[in-house]
Image 1 (tube, rainbow, N blue to C red):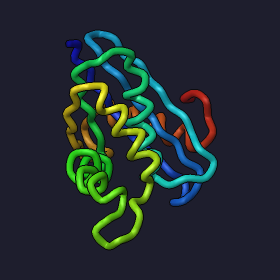
Image 2 (cartoon, rainbow, N blue to C red):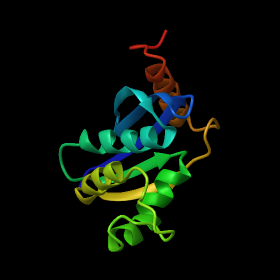
Image 3 (spheres, one colour):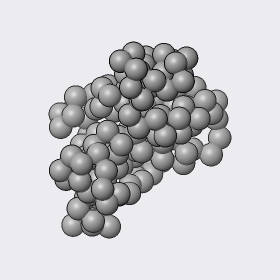
Image 4 (cartoon, rainbow, N blue to C red):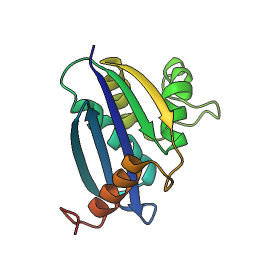
Length: 147
């Protein structure tokens, strides 16, 4: 099984506000950058979208290490989602899970692969995380390329 690294980030200008997401895929010496935007969203939705789109871009089942600076994303997919699914997407406070549409989509994409989730401190020394942040911010600003 191929081993792929997926580095993700989301950005929002205002929260809610105009948002951007980015995903960087690494396989051996290959690197692919993906990014997109939404006109009115939240930072958490962009973090989720980055992971979903990155995993969707992988065409075959792989071992995927997802690197994120979002504890919401990492904890949600590795811990909280199991209880949410058992309780039909209702949290312990009896309120619906926020962003359930995206959590369901992420759950579907994760099921296609063998995934591990790694948290990295944002805006620190992780080169690809910094690049993903740059791409997500650029997308949120409506720019199509860096400059």
